[in-house]
Image (cartoon, rainbow, N blue to C red; front, side, top):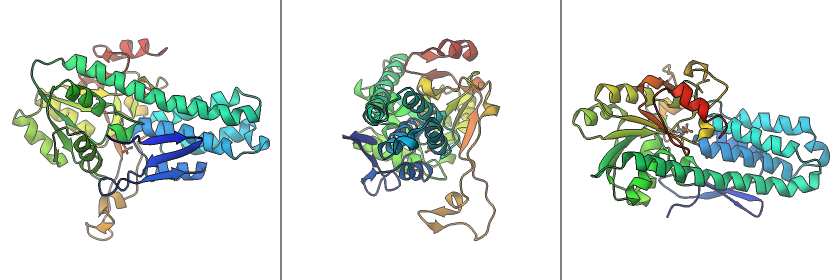
Length: 344
Ligand code: MRU
């Protein structure tokens, strides 16, 4: 069984170092807010729900060593802003940190807060698992197929991208438990290879049949009729259903439309940004060019070549067959359906 991506034990924090998967499964301790910031930014921990919970825990780590003066509201707000600045696109980070900040601000006694904050972030972590399992059930009920099906996925929206279980891979895991998975195609997902390195690794741990394809093979497998549905995760969903996810998702959605393959997003309600109208309001993270020029530290392109490295893209709602949330499957008029989730 996979270990949890993030584990809290007696006010200490442990996480899988995702930079070493699949070569090595190493659990590291994160001791300070600065270490948590770096873990998020360097992608030791990555995936929208996982960085959300990590950011929240980062605030708990700050509070753990703070004097009462360092826990004044403006200091807590500054610590929260610092954590949120680690990565811009996934709304879950800001969502979870702000939730934790508001909780911290609601407790006046700093000694009480030092204990209570760990209860709060532990509950957030436990909620993430519960929510992923619910997403899995909603998705599996939807596919309720009378035969085994083949799913194509992109990046890693699995256990590693959450505290445990996963969103898109949560649906696949639930389908697999119901003996309904024929096969999974995992896009390699350049530049960082989350599909090749992480998704294939975690599906293999669970004995779920998986083949890695390079990103440019998706059209081929769809044209051959090998894919029943595409299921991917999300980093931010706008009120109109436009969805930011790992770079390449948009292209995959266009391909799916052309080949009449249903295209689903699996994400918790916390990935919906109720503040933004459309996907054009989503800030797309641009990461260092070495992610493109190098693989495993090795230069693979001409030295000094220019590259573009947007880490995410936005898929228009019109290309999305449905959004699988822990509450229900959303489709049809996304604006109306998403609005109904505001109070969840
Ligand atoms: O850059 P990453 O690896 O953090 O990007 C991850 C993704 O794009 C995932 O698909 C998304 O966060 C959903 S995770 C359940």
